[in-house]
Image (cartoon, rainbow, N blue to C red; front, side, top):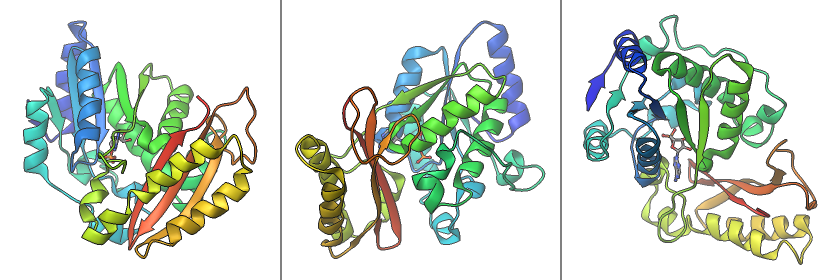
Length: 282
Ligand code: AMP
């Protein structure tokens, strides 16, 4: 695996690879890699000649500076995992390399999906995400890019970003990888205390409960009860739980047969923010 720190050098290498008619699969990450990330690498490996992974903790997508300052970093372990997964290139840039003009986001307008859920609770987050992903796509010129459904709203934003640009990149959604007790894998899980870690599976339990009881109950009653059951845990505090149409991401109070819905949740465990979601009727 080649580790490259400079955009120009990586771009030059990848351009040569494309000229030889080889396909490039790209997996952008912020590092502290786990099995969820590795499942994206594996899929990219199966579907492309060359796989590029980036590890970059993007400052412009953090609306909370202490979250940025305490974001877990484990570069040596990440490199070993990528090597084992037979990743071909690791792009490991500095902030200056990604943002030569300084870390500032562009402003994006999507179809309104940027204002829902994470957009409401993390102002500026999706501008930061779209800015960095656009830049990484320009550098890595992938044929396919892999994004986890764990960050479903982000995946939808990237799909819209691609439809707004000239870039012909296939966006490949990847299923959520979970711990045995159901907790969605996340780099931030490393920061949980023992008690927080013990209580965190309640998040997925709530989503599953919602899915299983949707047919027989009123959505708003279910959501109210789930808010209570999350907040009953001493270390957890619900930020939001919503049922939303996967196309508009607008909150829904009833299910229409010809639409697809997911439930979305954000919970604080102390100051660690965890998100998850589940497909409801498809
Ligand atoms: P991150 O490093 O958290 O920015 O994540 C990088 C990519 O991995 C994103 O596309 C995430 O959605 C995806 N990802 C993170 N956690 C998981 C998971 N548990 N299952 C599947 N994909 C994931």
